[in-house]
Image (cartoon, rainbow over the protein chains, first blue to last red):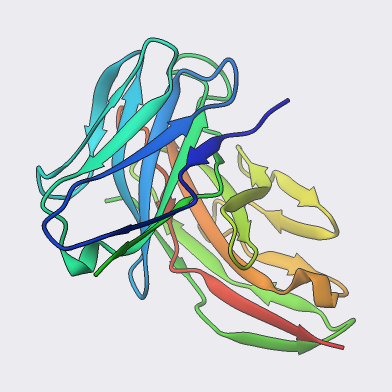
Length: 116
Length: 114
């Protein structure tokens, strides 16, 4: 069974530009999560989508946004890039709320975003 | 609130040494606990889990027991190998929460020398 996939692997952008990161969940999973892993800051929760709806959002500015498509894949958009947005962005998927084990999240390999 | 406190390290061991990485948690609801491992340049892999008190999760020689009385989930391995060198993250999910998210510790870098 295929795991969580993310694209691109690496992305280099200039300050002020926009970045788009993509994620495909494990087949059968309806929930998708985004986390940021910046150097020295650990893993920070960004967003949770389920059934096409944003269910929860971490403490990030509105220029971090995303969406989930009918096939449950997801996109993370970062507008007006800043140098401190440079990080590894990890996507995870799980079964939906009410399904067991909803609480088990499986991660993709990540997208390394570098802002210069 | 909900949080995880994890021994940060780094931890450096010789091959075949015993490993312990401490993890404690605070949860406002009923916790499920996880250990994830991150090898260099990769994403997180689920290593083991425990979903109720006194459960022991185990995988690849690693073990962790969910201790409700001490709110702990320490990771142990009796004999580490060079291939175990990685960053280990303790994580918490609060069942019944509408937030969906995992709460992570800061990670512990383990280096094993031959």
